[in-house]
Length: 457
Ligand code: ARG
Image (cartoon, rainbow, N blue to C red):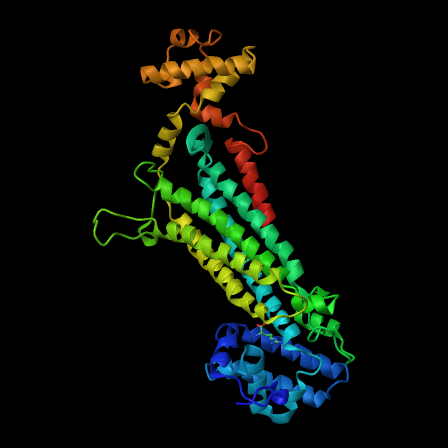
């Protein structure tokens, strides 16, 4: 088949080459964006007097039919037509004849592909933001039910101080809210119209890109034609934001894996989101969480692929850039799939409150509170720290918790303690006293939930 660019060639491409440089196998997924972009371009060409209104109408109607043909599965794309742009143009020529050949006036595939990918990514960003918001709402609902569910907070994976499950869940809400913010910021730079840049140096035709921008909902026009066709920063930015979403999901999944182990026994996985072993009949594995943790690596790889693809490219367009799509599509698909599974998986967890509370009562998570209590009795903090350290050592030798010591025992190390120390050591009180803005006290967390809900609206 003769190529749309075949004029200066005397020989056809090697069959190996046809297959090698063709991108239709993966860029066929942006057919809708390609057609929408071409419709807007054709309308603008007529409005600018570059083609006639009749020609524009014929082109637009032809494109509409092609869209229907593709959606109803009547189209078989051709590898030798290289990519989605030339496939659509070919289909249009078959459908409406010679006038189709006017569509590409004042346009190159270089600005066209940049347009298509931006349209695609803008839509996907909106979709991912919806999924992130659903996840945040799910976590906020859960948090509301666990304002008083005490659990240990950890540093170094060693029990440190008591917190609540609600507080722990809200930590993730903060991460996902930052992810939303990053996507919104990235979207502004995705939403820039590259059309009009042509191959690299703009065009001699009196085009009106602002009309195309209005029709397609772009917030700005690219200001430099070389940059317009060679910029893939927006794809890198998105993939970096996607990589961080995966980091957050993966950390959460790691906790679910730990918490569902017999050793922690903080959660019971729902059967619907776990699987068994083909050999060991007793097993119930946290596969969904493990897979999400595992898939994080794919998205980091996608980011790396994009960065390396771009770093050595001279201006403006280079064919290397065709490699952006599979990485970008994979990042989008992976993040979406993971969010889609993660939200109901988290919603189906059954938290074992008694085990969490028991874990919080062990491990001396109230030791800092004893030191703070002593500070209240006039002891300088450093000295109080030392006194409590010695008390803990004694408890370890006796196999007791701090609150299990009688006053006389405690006074050997902490002379100022009085009966009210037992109030200070009570785990629920330890949490309830932490009422600072970002603290775990139920009152503080209730207010944090309200703030988060408002921010998500
Ligand atoms: N399939 C190409 C890509 O994805 C479209 C742009 C091709 N431009 C060119 N001059 N060969 O990047």
